[in-house]
Image (cartoon, rainbow, N blue to C red; front, side):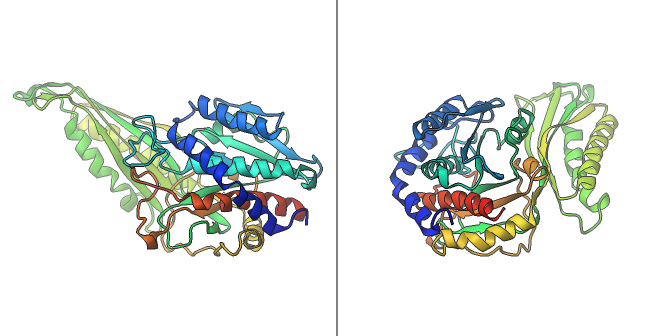
Length: 401
C-alpha cells in the first residue's frame, strides 16, 4: 500500500475546518451554468496554493490538472461546480449572497471535497502509483458542462483510463458520511429538455372567434403527450415525460399570439429516446394545425443514460470500506428506476466510470429536504468522508491496475 487507508481519513478530518471555510465561501457565492469565472478562479488559486502548476482551463469554465508520478495508468476524479437559479430560503450565516441563486444540489460540497482530495494527493505525490487527473466541471445543471469539457480535450493529455464522481444524498436513513457505490450497468436515465412553441393569432378576449387561440392546442398537446408512454411504447418501457414550464400571455382579457411549454424526457433506451422526440414533434405540429396554429418542438440540450462500469463498481465496493471507518453500505436494489440524470454520463460512455453517493443529511433526524429545494441544508460532517472516498478510489484503483 502507498498509504495506510485509515491515515487518509485522518488527514481529511484534520482538514475539516479548511473544508468548511471553502464550502461556505462557495455556498455564499453561487454561479450558474457555464458562467463560473469567480468559482473557477477560486479553485485555481487554491490549487496553486497547494503547489499545482500545470493547471489547464478547459472549455468555457472548466479546470483540470494532474498529480502523481506519471508512471502507469491515469484515474480521473470529477466534481461539478455550478449552482441553481433558486432563491434560498434558509437562515444561515453562510446563506447565498446572490438573490435567486443557490447551491441547492451540493456542488459546493463536491468542489470542496475534491479540493481536499487534491491537497492530500499533492502531499503524497511521490507515493501515487500512476497519475490522478482532477476535473472541475461547470454546467452540470444545464447538461452542457461535461460535453463542453470533452469537446475541449478533457479526455486527452493524459487520457484517463477510468473515472469516478461523487454526489451528495440528502434526506437518507443513513449516518452522515456513509458512502454507497452504484451497481454496474445503467444507473441514471438519459435526459432531453424540450420546448414546444405554439404560434397563433391573438386578439381581444371578447372576440375569440377572430383569433387562432394558441392556448387551446397547448392544452390538447399537453394531454396528448401523456399518451406517448401508453400508446407508442411497450408496457415495460422505463420512461418519464413531464412538463414543468408554461409561458404565455400578459393579461386576462387578451388572447396571446404565442405560448410555449417546456419539459423533459427521461429514459434508459436510446431507441425510445429517439421515438419520443419524433412523437412530440408530430403531436405538436398536427394538433396545432387542427386549431389553425403552428407549433415547433425543439430539443436544445440533453445527455445519455449513465453507465456504471461493473468491474470498477465491484472494485470500489471491495476497497472503500477500508478508507471510511465502516461508513459504507453495499448497493441497494432499486425497486423503482432512478430517473434523475447526470451529464457525466457522457464520460461514462467513453471510459469505465462509477458513481459514489455520499449521505449528507439524515432523514431519521427530521432532515427531509432533498436536492433542488430552497430549504436544503447539508451536513458538513460528511466532507472528510467524501474527500477520503475520492482519494481512496484513485489510489486503490491505480495500485490494482
